[in-house]
Amino acid sequence: MAAVGGAAWSQGQPVKIGLLATLEGPFAAGGADGMRGAELAVKQRGGVVAGRKIEIIKASSDAKPDVAVNATRKLVEQDKVDIMVGPLSGGEGIAVKDYSKTQPQVTFINGGSGAQATTLVNPSSNFFRFNTEGAQWMVGLGKAAMAKGYKRTMVIAEDYAFPYSQVQGFMSEYCRAGGKVPAKAWVPLGGKDYSSVIAKIPNDVDALLVVLGGADAVNFLNQYEASGGDKPIMGGSITVSQDVLNYRGKRRESLVGTLSAGPLADAYDGADWKAFVADYQKTYPVAQGGFPSPSLFAYVYYVNMKAALDGLAAVNGDLSNNQAKLREALSKMTLKTPNGDVRLDGNRQAIGTTFVTEVVKDAQGNLFNKVHSKVDGVEQMLGMKKEDFQIGSRDVPACP
Image (tube, rainbow, N blue to C red; front, top):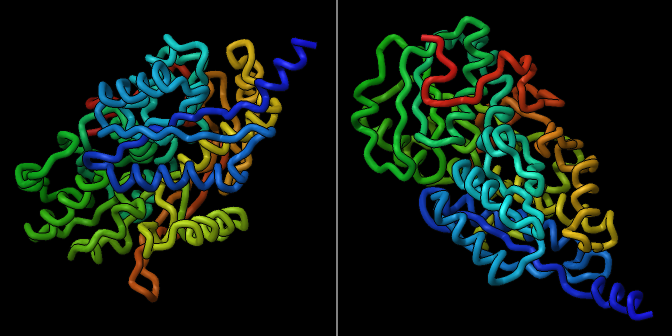
């Protein structure tokens, strides 16, 4: 009787979920929207799963790996959270994955970070990622660029793990199709001055691939406009997210027509996506800080939080035995998302859908991404044999 009573008491206790996003630094606007996405998933369940209240404890980072780990450590070791959701940025994700190995009693679920190495290199048995990652997000863009006549492209990207992944995803396909990348410029995260990079853009390139996010993207676009730059731009997934498309600046108008790729398209007409957008807009209207459509960060944080809650429901809130039942459920789960089903591979990494998109303007002057094409079932090896696959870096791939 004591054992039964103890189990019932345990089931009634709140589940503490740590929620980490970048609320400072260049991705602050995206991080705030990531929080909205995660909170929306909780709200849709009424804040309760399997009779257990969901208690969210928030923490902030600034896209630096050490700051993310310190914030995670506080949530895990002081606040005693049961589950972690986060972080947002690629280098942070690798660092938090490594930390997760020291805390086997906690289940870690990604927030928005998209570096390949998080799940491809020394994966952690208690770290799960239900969003596809940066290279997966770029599948299809290389072919679209060649079809547009962009045969020579310069890359301008932040110098850390996530942009390496984005560039790898683009170039792997682009190079195979005959495209050339004669120049790459790797810039620091949180950069303010892009004049030296702009001055080095070759005259003979057809387009630029810009993999900058948040304030970095805004700063570059404004400076490129001021310099008289007129090369067509292709964007990384975070470069054309709603937190960038809705900044106020002259260059914003010239983003119309920009090709990009990612796990969502604002104007996708799927019924589940439209329902998700409507719920986001109702819960977070523009007048209260929301965007006209959920940003990439809102979407991926929503997906990962939904996975945590669906997993809890599947095991009736049972977190006993170092959460063994929860982890088994997560590993085997087919997660229903607004953009289709997601399942995990052997490294607990998502296999899912990628959209190639194009920026358009609606009647109210808001910028959105419409669907150019759609690729389902994108896995982390991008269709390559294991022996042919290389994780992206400053120098890999290369097709000069």
